[in-house]
Amino acid sequence: MVARSSVPGMKMAGLERTARLAGESFGYEDMALLTGSRSIDVGYSRKLWGLAAAIAVIGFVALALR
Image 1: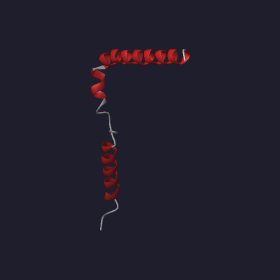
Image 2: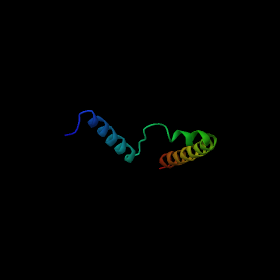
Image 3: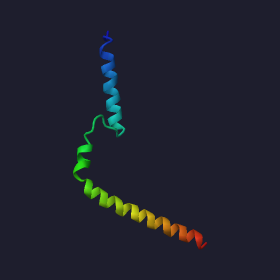
Image 4: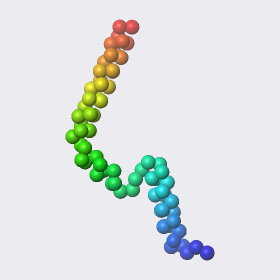
């Protein structure tokens, strides 16, 4: 028979494993990677937002000329 005190630990281990398989992480292991390359990500993000804005403007112009 399993002791009642060990059951919550087993349930938590199962939840952690399920969450990791789902792409979530317990703790902030991934945050260390983001802090080192923050300046590179900001420049890339601005270019990506600029591209999205340009595509949106082209779409609006195409709808207006229709």
